[in-house]
Amino acid sequence: MDGPLLIFHSGNDRLIPHGKKHGDSFMECAVGEKELRFYPDGEHVCANYLDEVIPYTIEWLIKQLGS
Image (cartoon, rainbow, N blue to C red; front, top):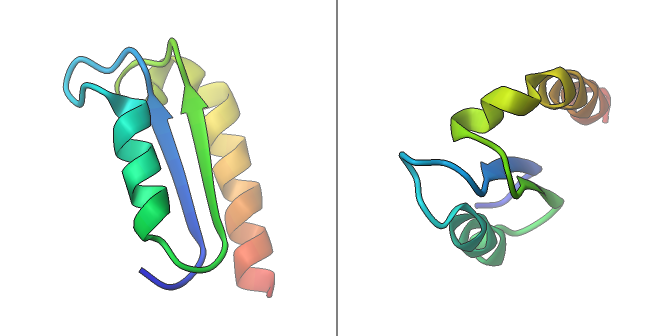
């Protein structure tokens, strides 16, 4: 993958276990600007951190689209 990439992964996700391992493997394959935000006690889709994830994602998208 070539292009900006933002990944959120959770450590307490019951649907996708080993979130950090999956996130790290995505990061290894990605080329270009990339960022992994990992929440060790996060639930699936970081549902218990949406108050952080959504504003961060919006700011990240604004930054990317403004470039």
